[in-house]
Image (cartoon, rainbow, N blue to C red; front, side):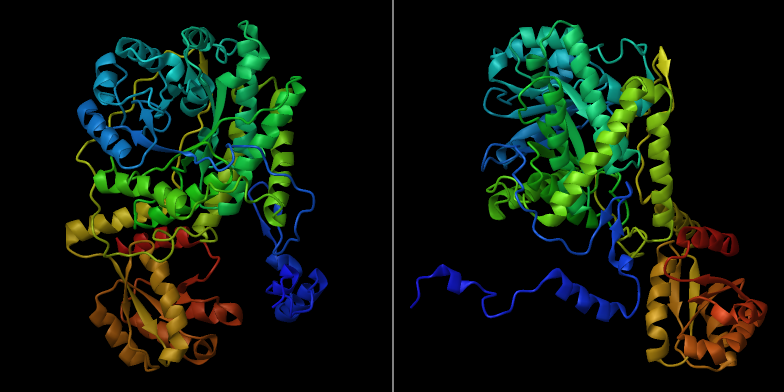
Length: 619
């Protein structure tokens, strides 16, 4: 038996393969098509190659301590402070290691949250030992919440230095999200400095100020835009702290970052790694020896769907995995029902256990920066860093983050990405499982807490105003169509229907009938299957029996060539208000339109516009 481990390699019996060998095989599959077909592109214009070689000489990105787990944060956002306390204690007893206190009116409160009062805070934290290695992170627009928490720590006799609290003060992010601030442009970044000095002087270690990228992400922005916003906000806070008499060496430890984590696993992983590299570059520019920035992650609001919300569990798992591998110090998972209302105990349990399984069973924290050296991730990290740094420099040239917001620089760039994203969602290039693809019209209702959202807070008396970076959800447009379907079901006792006029044999029509069913049901229009065949009279009779107002021809191009025109004429004569054809018209399009075909549905077409138009025929 050999003891030479080199002889035990799994690939030892195979000749080494080069990239040229791989390209040769790929070219054979592409059959003349351009190789660029396999190259993806991000919303920042970064190219994602289909294959990468190992990155040579790559060093791990410094983040969490080696083998240290990230903090498992759980939202505390129930309007009833007593119920919020019961939830918090249950979470801590069952594996959470920190609490994210969300106050009403905060950027990510979404209509819920604790009241910013001493009584509500004391009730919510009753029984929580803040000096027992339990992390606390605040999300609030009112700086008074931070002062209230400091007073509570003092009243309870906890030592401030023994409490792990990220106070989350973020006047820039608050203003960017709402589009207004009570502070003028010159005072905005420094508006919380006096409170920071007071808290730090009282013995709290912080960090206190949050550079929050979720503002850009929630509004539909790109990864580079989110990073540039965090950098520019962080630099603005550094300047304000230094102007307030705090040395940069100390000031940098008073700031932390918050990023959104979404379903693009590799981009999210690269984004978290990139932020650390970029912030280290800023520290070096300040004459400081870089130290790992504290980075908090939260699963993305914009990716959540109200329809088929159980898919949100998978989205959260991917996002958490990416943020954890990317080096996040703390992660908050939005429960899978968050877009529907205040999550119940089951949804909170799943959110908590998502992290516990990844840490305790998958051991994701055992290796520091496991992506180091991976060609694809290293390339994405580097290119994302370059793009984000260029945008950060553009913001700085505009006079800094506040001036850039006043000028609409950031908003216009985010809006351009959102517009491109909207197009891809409408055309289902960006798939939203359960919403734009693979819908379930018979899904059961999902339980949430019976707590109504709070009304929007009254507008502040603004000394500064500009266009807000308002949060969105990507599935919203498709879900509004489903809402119209639900309204018809409630008012008329049935959903709108489309008759799938299947032509030929099952082998001919099954593929396109399956496509058409998913297409129409994504808009809440239930599909009724025809039995197939080529007799126009039988097809017309089946259509009339279906009770549908609209119809869609489904078959192969070969069958369409002979049967589509007579079938369309028969459906039109039978009273179909609008006739669709699953596929492109091609050379037959003019004849098909003359026969009564009004629209063609196909992969890459504008599904949203077609479905919205369908309701004009249905209603």
